[in-house]
Amino acid sequence: MRTRTLALVLLPLLAACASAPSDPQADWEAGAGRKPEPDTLFSMARIYVAQGRDDQAEAALREVLNQAPDFVRAYEELAHLYVRRDLVDGAVAALEVGLKHHADDPVLLNDLGVCKLLQKDPVSAEQAFIRAAALEPDNARPRANLALALALQGRDDEALALWRQVIPPSEATQNLELVKQAR
Image (tube, rainbow, N blue to C red):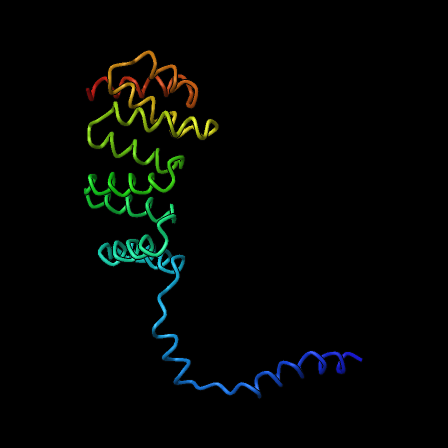
């Protein structure tokens, strides 16, 4: 009985293969002209980043965004790549383009806030962190980053209160003291 069932399943498959002979050269040429899918390009870009091949990673990420402008993770990865290369203005530009496609993406907003801090613009950073925190109220990262932006503006009481919501009070006090020394 089992052999008969297997034969019934295999016969249509074999018939399909026999009726459509494959031309290896035609298959090769058809595949050669295909562009990789955005997911594949994104994976390649991450491999390039891990290998330190930043130029190839940037090219792959840009191609992802050319093919799929709504591919949010590509904006994140491109911004991270730019920050790593000390091209913060490029990171901000990538994040702002990403936010044109996904205005309410909390990760893009948080990353934009971090870049604004790197540009020594804590007021703009504050606005990005407020939006990110509002979109993900259970995520401590944008709130902790907001506390840093507030502390850098000299708004110590607000910063300390916010830090105490996300980290132990002793660490919050320590963070504030570090920022005061850095100001």
